[in-house]
Image: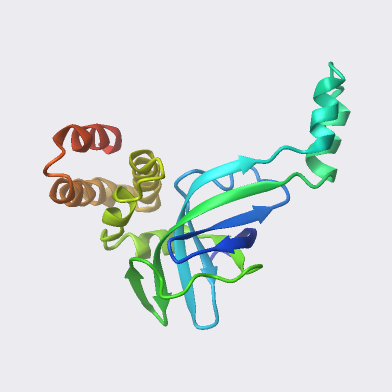
Length: 195
């Protein structure tokens, strides 16, 4: 089994989601739509990354005002300084023992709990059921449709090539049930996840 990649630590949390802070981003991690988890004592909370913000930094403002920047100064700023990065996560499920539940967790994570990127096996296990799609579709303050497309594509890629198409067909069927009164929205999502 592949070791999970540590992304950052919880800054603030609620039952619906949480914000994680990290010093610098790993290459290509985190990405919009990634499934992540926060392990707790005998459980884990799962979430989808819906936002990555690089907060402003007084040192960056000074570099920008100075005009032309030397590549060494940019590299120093990115690698050696505390670049404040915040990651928004929508809670979509939790695990107790070996059982996975899709929906809001009974409790949020605590400050300084560690956020990990889920590996392909965890992604396949979590997306074996697709009840969490309703939770994402109802997230009014988020780019919900974009989040679903990114997550479903990533989940399909985690499946073996011979089962990817079936996974996406199942997701399309579930979305059809959930969005049967909003056919334009449904069609837009389906066009973007089709194999």
